[in-house]
Image (tube, rainbow, N blue to C red; front, side, top):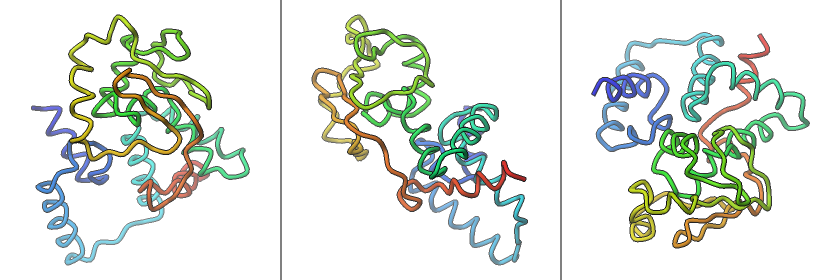
Length: 204
């Protein structure tokens, strides 16, 4: 219960999208009331506050430590399109690919499943959530884990899920297998995250 309350407080500050479990109608209504109240009071925010908020939104969305996000941002900033590069790096982590493929209901669950060795990439067992997948990689639930309650009913529940598999992945939910067939592209509106503001924060 304490963890749920903590997530609720974080999501109130950073937005519902940072946690899957706060993306509910009840939370959205609460968020709308809070936003209206702040608008009425006429509160403004500094550039630093805006940058910090967006940086925290990215960090909590992907479940990263401050050091991890800083390292990702630093590496991406050296690329021709920093925002696109950062998005690829975050999405193509092993835990991100497992989540996007629909093998876990949340990024946190995906991270734990990878850490516990439930997945293989190209037949090799992995335990590092930050492992970078690439085009051509085959991500599979490990044979010894297919009977785990973690993956029971995934095929049957596929029709009830509202989360679409991205175009850079193809998934055979019956075989509990996915293939990386491309790379994610960054769209500010679709991603709901403004990476340029994150770079502003780190370039202060």
